[in-house]
Length: 132
Image 1 (tube, rainbow, N blue to C red):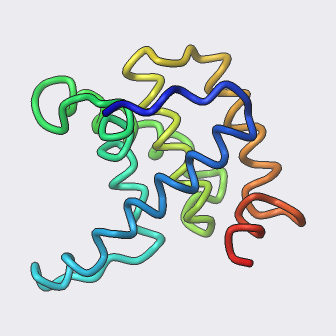
Image 2 (tube, one colour; image 1 turned 90 degrees about the vertical axis):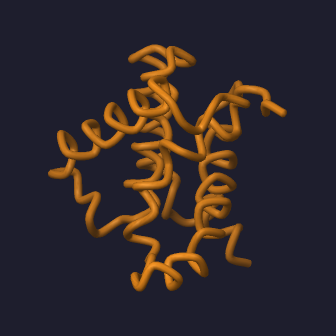
């Protein structure tokens, strides 16, 4: 069942953190393939959690397009310190996946990411409250 699209920046941040928690659920299964999955690797899963939360197919041409588009956004934005900030990297790929699906436009995606950059790890942020 599809989750409703967040309406406010705060709702987006909460959903991004929930999506990251969902992606963390894959960590135990990584060992079955002889690999480890760290928080720094979770951005790879953001383009899969997006269609899952939106009630879309997780495989097929649309899913492939979402994955390629989201990861391309990651590559283009690596100078923003994404490798040292796993939550921001995940957020970027998650929001980019919504952009590729046409669920948000470029301006909305930029605003969501701007809010996320300010609040994902700052004092009183949702991520700080999540750990309490």
